[in-house]
Length: 285
Ligand code: SF4
Ligand code: SF4
Ligand code: FES
Image (cartoon, rainbow, N blue to C red):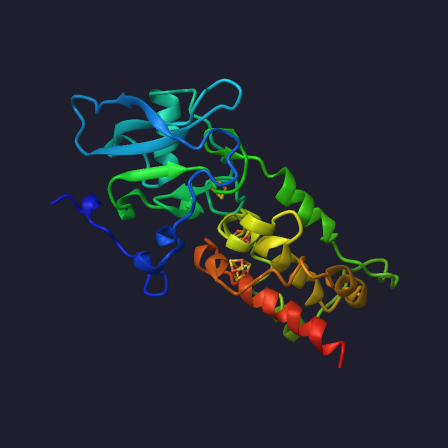
């Protein structure tokens, strides 16, 4: 049997059966087009294909297409690299140049290629093709308005990120010829926070952000907010907490944990949010 046809669990703590992939994400949630996804085109396997694989990919260009559709591309995975992003690049280069998606680093560090893969928000460049169960369905991140195909509009979530002023606020004059130092213990407090690549897989998968996205900041922005609250070099802790003290900005997190389950970097935004709530509480007593 072809090993590509096996379903392989990513790891014991990320079972596919318990992933947000099984959470009933409304497919058209937040999409700017009609909800019905129609039948699309089919590109058959090349005659000499040794290892055919069919990818069903969401296609939609608002203002041009009346309805979204699913196009089905059968490729020979022997001819492309091992990751899903390699397959998408192969389709764009050799089959259909109109297919649109974001990518940059191809190494899981830029966050550009986040998309919904078989129902789970993940990075296409860190998703091995051989781990995908068949058939493979690829959609844009839910809840972001579609710009085209797999490209979601991040204007709102980036504005939310900008709203927390994600840079070091420090009024103390730094020694002129060296960086601001931290003890190893203080530096370790940033582990699990600084690794965030702002892919927005978590925010896009957060039910509270679907319903209250205008006012709830969402897990990506809140993890970043805690990243600065936890930084010993930052001197604006009180100011930052004042800015977060709001019925919606933080407290609309109901600890559903979709964010932590779907983070492709293995981070825990829900824990960061809980720590912000704890800081907000402790300063009142
Ligand atoms: S916390 Fe994880 S899922 Fe959320 S933006 Fe950062 S890297 Fe992406
Ligand atoms: S834990 Fe909070 S931020 Fe994370 S998915 Fe649930 S409601 Fe959203
Ligand atoms: S291309 Fe940069 S994270 Fe995938």
